[in-house]
Length: 123
Image (cartoon, helix red, strand yellow):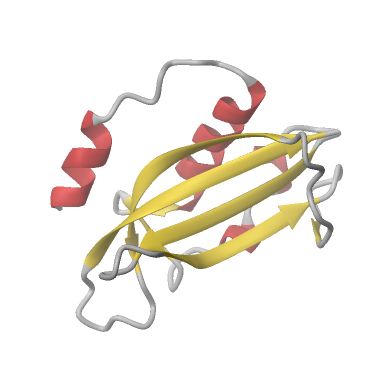
């Protein structure tokens, strides 16, 4: 609950560039009860209509471990038709990210951790 309040209180900058709009649409699709929970929703199941047409999109969800390092919860990449694919993003790819609350499948206590949703979009 605390993570939800903090995340909602942090402004996202209000920039309406393609990456930010795509990130907002993805978050609206994958958030369950105000947090990312991989046991209930996977980023690989994002509907192709959520993604910008004709663009390649990479989605990454990480969380902060107790030692301060970041760990990947999940990531997925989609081709220009919204199908899951695997390819390295170009070095000049634009990205955006925002803090999100994350519940881990490996934590049966349901502790909500500080996480980050990152979205990259390119041609």
